[in-house]
Amino acid sequence: MGKIKSPHVLVFPIPAKGHLIPLLDLSYVLASHGLSITILSITNEVSHLQPLLDTAASNALQIQPLILSIPAIQNIEELPLSQIPVFLQSLQTLADPLEQWFLQQQEQISDGFGFGPPVCMISDIFLGWTQETATKLGIPRVVFHPSGAFGVSVIYSLWAHMPHQGVESDDDPIPIPDLPVPTTFRKSQISPFLRMYKSSDPVSGFMRHSMNLNSKSWGTLINTFNDLEPIYIDHLQKLSARPAWSVGPLFLQREQKTDIVVREKPSSSIESVCLQWLNSQKEKSVLYICFGSMCILSNKQIQELAAGLEGSQQSFIWVLRDPSSGLPANEYGVLPDGFEERIQGRGLVIRGWAPQLLILSHSSIGGYLTHCGWNSTLESIASGVPLVTWPMFADQHFNCFLIVDYLKIGVRLCEGATTVPNREDL
Ligand code: UDP
Image (cartoon, rainbow, N blue to C red):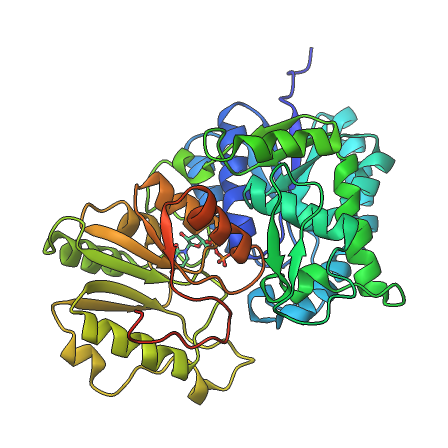
């Protein structure tokens, strides 16, 4: 008699770190519960999966990559926001190869090889079209939301009702329909890629159709926890009339704070520099400053932030991302002359990828100046660190509202990707 195979789940992330990291964490949790997991990669090289594959292998867990690459794929983190819907639409070309792969898995099962065909697909909120693929293959699809329940509720309302259509001015308030509590955002707070819609434009038509397909999924997973935003979790459940599970904060399931699941593993020397430096600071005295994996500050923003930090006499760790290939290198990422010498002992500047979980959970951290990315928000909440908010785009304005107005665990500094904050306010 053949060995009984464990249920096999296909996981389909998008390659933006804020989406990818929690879905890889979830994959690890599912594998730890005895499921076999295949993770789809749209690039030929799987170095972003390697730390996870290695950890899984050393713990005898069943996780394998599936490479279905797209030619000339660009790095989503280097794309202008307006190009993201085009990128997401291009992923739809994977529907056919995915179906072929599924059929191969069915053939393999009769040979007794491999994981067999998946019994379920878990895919990102921006891959609503995979609902149609899953239906065709006869398997349930579960939609994964890397954002919080409040932010996701706003996003679904926007795509379903388009309340921003016809609103001219960026400052005009837009009531968001069908939320459990009346909520209003200004047009400027709704990222263009979340609100662009012209019926004649095939890309925006695709986005709307794809987002609305999520309501047909068999179930909903949200990287949040019940005590944080219960009315919005209930709301999402009612919206689709399907089960909605809050499974977060997913990073807490990671075995070690440093066991980051993507390629940008901070070097162990950065980890030890940070730890040594934090150990030398007073309890709850340090402001941590980081704007996630996609926001890159212009020199004007950096100058003002640097002047504010210098003037404040505050201890800080500041993570600065270098400009991506599409941006002029001389206009982004440059600190004022002599800044690092002047703040020595009181401030630490990290260039590139910082060990954020390690930093936020250190007892010397007293606050986090954040772009309000959802993962960063959850990580700060879980570490008991209050927030100073500077939302830039995507769901960040909605998360800022949750932090400051609903949960009251943060204060606003400013908002907008190109805003230059006032050094005095800082
Ligand atoms: N992160 C990190 N080091 C960095 C910058 C970011 O470890 O230098 C991690 C952070 O801990 C979080 C994720 O990257 O888990 C960023 O996700 P988030 O949703 O906060 O923001 P996004 O990058 O999507 O804007």
